[in-house]
Every structure is written in structure tokens, then in C-alpha cells.
Length: 413
Image (cartoon, rainbow, N blue to C red):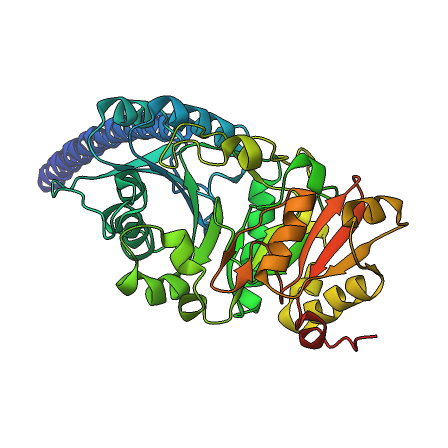
């Protein structure tokens, strides 16, 4: 009987252990089911996030899955009240922007509250819209000045936008465009190469896409670049250190002429192309069409896709360009006297013509049809007093100042 009792007790213990094991198995199964449901929920959440990421990518927003890329420069279009012009400018930029969108983030900075401009700008997903409102009345500093210049170039517009881009968005460089410009196919490659020059050579103050004497009859070579003592404007890039210097004293208007003063550029120079990388179509604007027919409408916009990444631009460095330019000048044939255009026509190859003062230069410039204007003792486009342009398509004409040969290290003959 004792043995039977022991066996029954053992069986009961076994059954209890089995029930316990079965209970534990049930608990694990519930946990497994719970884990499976959690996995399904996470999969659904991931799918939703994936859809959000894809949507953002379609709109050109940087995503976490993309490789990080440091921008070369922001591109900002300064706008005011010309919605149709702004649309034309934006569409021109977008023709070449998609492949470099991360290198050159695009902004529109509007001065004022024009609703059409705001609506037009915000209709493009590829750019960021900024607006600055200032309700103080606009006044000129001197009698006879145009209020429109103060509206477009005033402290509250230009300076505010550049402060935003350099100090709020922390860009290293900014390219400034106006709302009446079209760009060339190699515009972005040109400025990327220019950014490298700005980093290497601190004697360069800015890179410009513009040549004041860039009319069709005066240009030929889309690969040719020059240093200039005259600030060109009309599509240009500067760096943050330069803006740190300029921002505290930025003028209320006529900032382009202000940058042409020696006290502001302090002997630094500007890079400009022979063939323009921007075209200004703004016949109706702040200048009221001034000089448009003669100087702006005939501008040649480059249509050659230059591979600037493979182009050696070391000749533009300060220590090399003097010799480079002097060699070009030494190979040019000197011509003198009257009938200078006729003598240039009859010459084989490049020519150089010496002028004695500003009045003499203006007389020669008038004969050929180039810009006569000077600012602070410097003719437009000049480098060390020398202005160069093309004649009869390919021939270079150098107008040489009284001290130019000496500055270039050329012994006068």
C-alpha cells in the first residue's frame, strides 16, 4: 500500500508539472503573438515613413539617406514687384539646376508685399522663399536720384538677404542674381570653379558672370577669363569673410558703384569672363531702360558647355596673371595716330592703342563703340589701366593706359 501511495503522489506531481509547463507554453505563445503584432505595426510604420521620404525627395528636400554634401554657394534672386520677370529668371535657372541643387540651394528674396511675386515664387518647390517687409518711407540721399534704385538696392533688401544667408543659413558663399536675368548652360560649373579661386587667392574679391563689353561684336572666346580692377556686378559671388567686412557699411543704394571705390575694394580684383554667363533682359526696371538698347540688349550669352572642372585656371592667380596678361600685350602690334578703327581693320592679329588720359580714352572708346565710363579712375573692365575687347570677331584690341606697361613689367619701346 505504501508503494501505491508513493506512485499516486508521483503521478500527481507529474501532472502538476505538466500543467505548469502547459501554462508557461501558453504564456510564451501569447508573447510570441504579441511580438508578431508589434513587428507588423513597425513594418507598417516603416512603410509610412518610406512613403514620406519618397514624397520629400520628389520635392527636392534633402533626406537622411542621401550623402551629406557641403553647398558651394547659395543662389539668391533679388525680387521686388516684377512677377513675370521673376518667373522667366527662375525657369532659366531651373533649366540647369536639378543636377547641382545640393551644391547651389536656391532662394528668392522679395522686398515688399507684392502678392503676385510672392505667389509666383512660392509656386516653385525647388527654391526657398524669403520676404522682408519695411514700412518706413523710402527717401533718396541726394537730389535727382531714382527712388527705384533704393527699393531694389537698399540696405533693407540686399543687406538683409545676405545677412540671412550668411549668418542664419551659414553658407560660405552666395551668388547674387536679379529678377531679370537668364543664365548660361555652364553657369554653375563656372561659379564652382570660381569658388575654388576665391579660396586660394585672397586678392580676388568676387567672381562675376558679366562683361560690360560683352556685346556680340566684342567677344569671341567662351574659355577666356580675366582679372579686372572694375567691379562688374550683374551676377556675382562673394564669400562670408568678404561679407563680414562689407555688411556693417553696406550703402542704401548704388552698391555696385560703391564697390568700385578703391576705399572699399582695397586693391582687390574681380574675375570676369570674356563671354557673359548671364543675360539681363530687364528693359523695364529701376534704370528705366537706360542704355538697354545700346549696351544690354546686344550682350552675347554663352551657349557653350565649358568643362570648367577640367580647365586649368591657375593663370588667374595674382602672381601668374600679370605675366600672362603682359605676354598677351607684348604680342600685340602698337598702332598710333588717327583712323584707329581703319588701322585695326588692316592689322594682322592683336593690336594695342595707347591713351594718355580719361578724355583720350573716351574718344577712342567712342570710335569702337565700347563703354566710355570710368569710376574712381578706372575704366569699365580695366586691368591695370588696360581694357581689352575683340574686333572683327577674333582680333584683340588693347587700350593701354599711360602707366599700364610699367605696372605690367613691360619695358616701353
